[in-house]
Length: 449
View 1 (cartoon, rainbow, N blue to C red):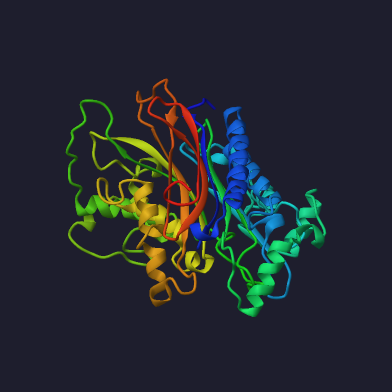
View 2: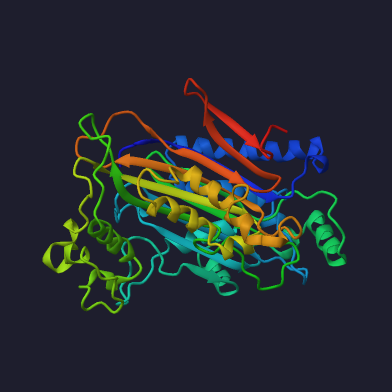
């Protein structure tokens, strides 16, 4: 594939009640140095031809080795004094599906209840890429497994079969997390509160593929068997791409035609067909009949035309563009699960009419994870008293015109976005200055430390 994008990435290292008064300079410096190192390493890979998936997994693998972060070797303990880890990956692309390019199809995989696998994120990657099985029993041809979630100890058996590295319980044990575990059992307050939740990385590679990778030890003193948002598609992570209309060229009208109700219903039927195939049938024979009005009779039947031409653009003077996003969440996992946070942000952007809120992924992320957003509102009266609703989301948004004659030689750029509703979120990303030069950004608060 031809390089079309300037690679970029963003990493998060956890979010929650991270207070300046409880974050001494030496501890801040340690987190800053780790995130900066992992950012540089991952950026180097992307700029030297690594895929988004490989780069994102690389970044999270480094975080899993670092006891500073709540994943891998730095994972928290359950009430039983055990460590149960979770991880996930998901991929999509601004390009149409290509069977020879695994990153161009929307796929996701999560693993949970993992005990002794050194790098749970690598297990999630293998779960994604190992050949799956079609309904007729034949192997899939896209390298994507048909199992989106796998749980230990069964998934650990697969990890051994796939040659992944294992470590004994002692390797994952750290004094810091054990002390947190004991204080939590006694109901004592933490002297330093640094993270609540997941680490993750979102990458955009030079070919326009997006990947998100996430990993966590979960919630301190969670019940054994508890499953959070990290391995759950749509809650703690999501990646998605879709076709939409874009104004191309100087001859395009600045004011698009207003679509009729029939146009809107026709588009809605196509979107709903992804999860409810009956919407592609005739209204008269559908198991679930859509509403009736005078406009519905104008909706063309898929039986009367080829599927490839069914989804006609609403505005003839507008050409198509491909829109892709990937997001990762960190914070109170149960809240992310309750509001399906990651998918909600994506759906807000995908299904909103052109020119209305949200105007981009940044708006959608803010509406879900920003101050006063959906996550915070979901906590209701428990906000600021239990940690419920706290968290943040990082992501990357990319667009590419797909109309004939709309290509150009310059590299496109993805947009890095993030927001959070709590006092802090560790994050590191590649930014550009006014001259276009790349600069590294590492922050925990909204302002510099």
